[in-house]
Length: 331
Ligand code: NAI
Image 1 (cartoon, helix red, strand yellow):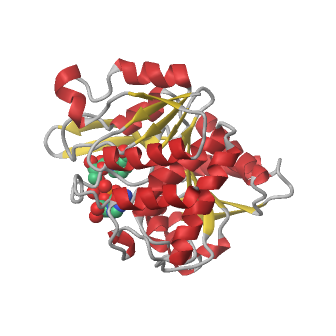
Image 2 (cartoon, rainbow, N blue to C red):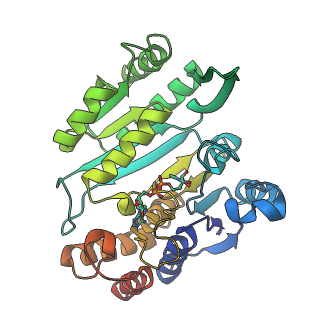
């Protein structure tokens, strides 16, 4: 099967190269179609997201993507947000899981954040009011809220999860988050076997830090889901460990939660685990279950042993050495 591979910016090429090598060594039947997006192609194509990238994903339906840099406060619009909107990748799935053997604030953590991926504050509708103010319009629609709620409950059902928690700020944003919450509540009535609760996002942040083991599937509007997933990463060992999937009806793009990490780019010390785990999600999605389980088993073994780790986890292996260790453990 042909899969689009977008190496991305910063540590992107290092971590995607690692995941690619490991997937190739796992025996999965995959051919890669490499296309470039991000700051590195801006000059050549006049756009950080050239048409051939979208065309390739539309054709292959599945992509593995490295992180892409977004300029702060100026410059081009986030390529990541554009991709999600252009391909209507409405569900952002981010599993937060602790691993035996790794340094972590909590153990036995295993919850999945389902983030609405197309609207909310990320609709990017902003304007200046002269020089004295700026306004951002936060769009929440019934259609997207129904769709993401259904996705979260279906995921809970398929993964045998007991509970869905909707998080919101409907006490203050009575109309927009009120609509999101109403849709989640209505959807919950169709899934009698799955417990449903809702929590205001500030309280949710505290509860997640104190007792993340109480959560199974957490569904959230765009911005809250984004923030809570980085927080989730902090609970279980850091951004190097959290994978993600952007899923729509026509395509799916798998990518780590972390960004391009310019502070460590090019140093061969980035942890490729989040991208490898994104690759495992991809393999499961396309039905390559044996290859996915093989890689997962190798990672769990390495983590449990605790000897072969990258610097973010207290080890001294380079990205490349860690990759080779995973490949050795596969065989
Ligand atoms: P970041 O996630 O790149 O880095 C935050 C911290 O975590 C840094 O100290 C970094 O070294 C560390 N870190 C991240 N990934 C790591 C890994 N695999 N191994 C070891 N350490 C790791 O977040 P930051 O610095 O806020 O963003 C950098 C750029 O990435 C920005 O331009 C941002 O817009 C972009 N970004 C892109 C995303 C995407 O493409 N999906 C997602 C998040 C940010």
